[in-house]
Length: 121
Image (cartoon, rainbow, N blue to C red):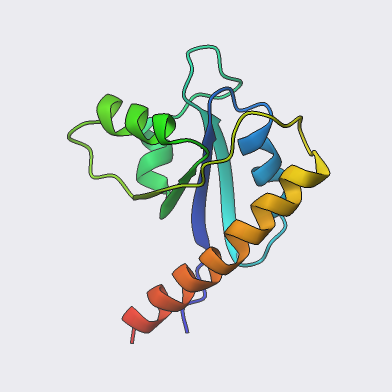
């Protein structure tokens, strides 16, 4: 059994609502270590090369966020980037956003951990 937590980077545009909410709801989850960042120049915290080197997986809220990362960090060995397709229609910690994130992410995080653990034997 692998006891190292999965390193998850959540990405949206501004790092104010969607990715910040995801980081907040998963920050005490024993399965994962989490960070969040945005792709825009005026984001609260902008995606960095260090974030991408740290992460095992990136969950991008929109396809354009994945495209920005792959173009801006071309040549860098990127972690898996999964697009959630969550629109920018929510405020920070919106209950509907929290439910949507948990429904999408909980099974995916479990699957990623199981796959990683199976490969370590």
